Image (cartoon, rainbow, N blue to C red; front, side, top):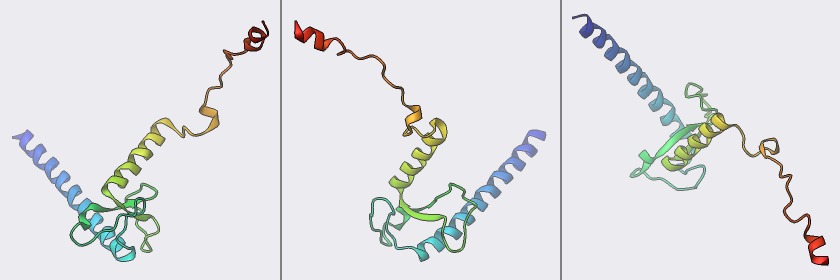
Length: 121
């Protein structure tokens, strides 16, 4: 009896969270679609009413609660570019910025250092 009560409360909490997320997404998605042209901000793919469900709203700062009314934290991305953007962000968080020189190891061995002497022989 106690487990059923706990499961019911847990189900209610999960259902409420999903409802809130859906309402929040519909709110900023609707506003973003009114503000911006229906074009992916990365690959420039154009969208119509028939395929509009494939156009997503990306939060530039990755904070889904940061939804300014002017849309300055949003950009419209297709499903593929949106997935790629989040993958790149996760890699950057996990591994840091791999493009900096400080992460590169410097080679110290020169396999051709004695080549000039060998050519003289």
